Length: 138
Image (cartoon, rainbow, N blue to C red; front, side, top):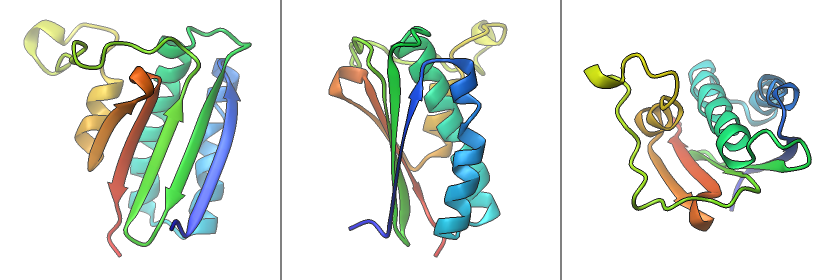
């Protein structure tokens, strides 16, 4: 069972995505996250929300992004769900943005960052939910 559970609903706009840092700051205080945990979590959650708004909901303001977070002494588990149609998670392998041929691409970094900095990441609900976990140092 989670020690802390947080949930928020965001519309698919840049203004709503800009609420993520305040949301994370509130969580940091309530769940006693370290500065390192908070900075990693803030980056990953921001990337996941931005991807859900842009790729999942395609900036349609009548669609929402649901963020659910469970925090225990051992880990922070986050699910970000959009209202888009999802995608074929088996065929859609993100390109490494550090590869020479991808260096100038403007997209493709969000999922790579989440994969690299989280301890686990998976797509659920045909790709409309991204779940990632960060292990805690306690």
